[in-house]
Amino acid sequence: MLRFNIDAWNAYAPGLEDCDAWQAWLNTPFVPDDSVKPAVMKAIPAMLRRRFTPLGKVAMGAALPLLTEMTSVASVFASRHGDTP
Image 1 (cartoon, helix red, strand yellow):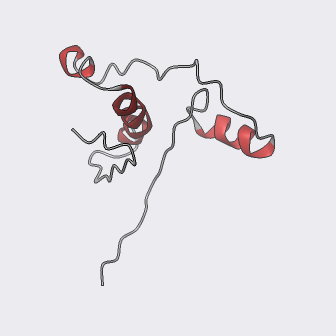
Image 2 (tube, helix red, strand yellow; image 1 turned 90 degrees about the vertical axis):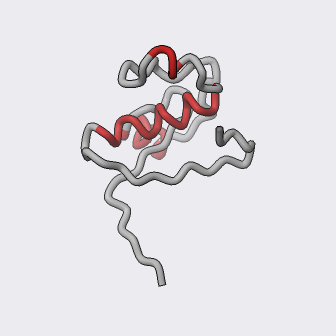
């Protein structure tokens, strides 16, 4: 049997990029404004960053804040859209 602990998690939706924003959304749900794009990820080299698809940018936008809390992050990326390259 495989067992693991979740030490931290993060999610991304347009305009909901931190815990406070998610908490506010939980108290007063609204449809996120999809015109808001993920912040530019300065931690990723520009040549690599420009190759991300929009879904890849969102995935990295959700994953990168976890790196500030931990030095090594085992991660799982799942997409129903098949954007795994």
